Length: 110
Image 1 (cartoon, rainbow, N blue to C red):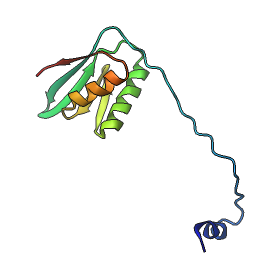
Image 2: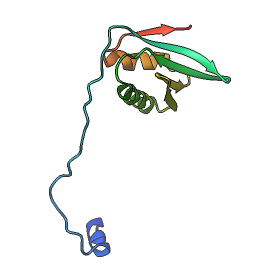
Image 3: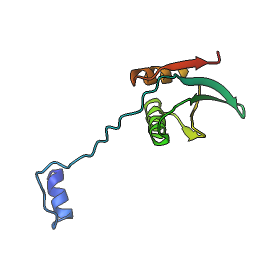
């Protein structure tokens, strides 16, 4: 008995459809600015953080960018006061990600 038969036994009223499910993908264009983003290293409460500042576009776009960076690096972080705060020193990796998206990035501090 394969998995399909087992599922039919568990859910006899379910009707199988052959149509693929529609997956919504959101391709949102980020505002690319002329001034570079500032990528700096800070210590806050004894912890090492990378802070990205200087985005001139919409705050929602910057939040989406923060989420994407955190996901790609598999790290924690937050979005506060028009800046992205990433836990740890990931300046080089973040700068590569931002340059690939078309941003100019300036490294500050060390």
